[in-house]
Image 1 (cartoon, one colour):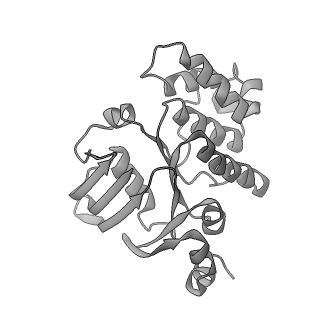
Image 2 (tube, helix red, strand yellow; image 1 turned 120 degrees about the horizontal axis):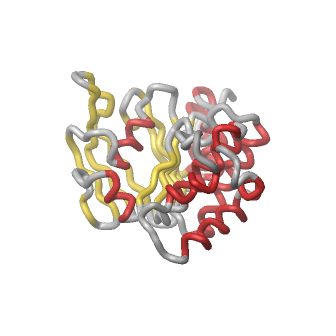
Length: 233
């Protein structure tokens, strides 16, 4: 579904991605783990179209999208739930969800919203409240639900567990796992390597803008280097 070849990106003169190759197959949950500053978020921003690519190619569902504007990538089925949630704090929960569906003006939008409320019941309870008043975990749920309102076939999920209590982290990862049943392919970026690899099919390990390791998620969890460096085992 998604193929990244030789991807390079820079901030000014400083190159932060040094020729990455990443593949995501339809129906998979693929995770990219690594330390803070490894370039994981920049990778997702490049795929979403909000960070310039200096070299390489991004192909989505057989079509090269390297130079396609971000909003057109969403219409092709590629959605980003960004790091730090970035919800519209001065709007209500329902208004945030409707903005996620800005491409659509059909009756299915209401069904999509009800589906979001089934996935995150607390959002239904708070649908008329200002989103800035939600807890951190509820804001993360809203960010994911808003991205799903765009009806993506591939969801780019950036650090969904950041800053959350352990019980909420478990809930978020359960939701990620459940997206398979909705036929949504997921590319998940996480510092919580153990939680991410537990729900993923395959994984990539990034170090300073490069892919250091890749493989089946279960194999990476058992790899001594991963266990020592990222899992603290």
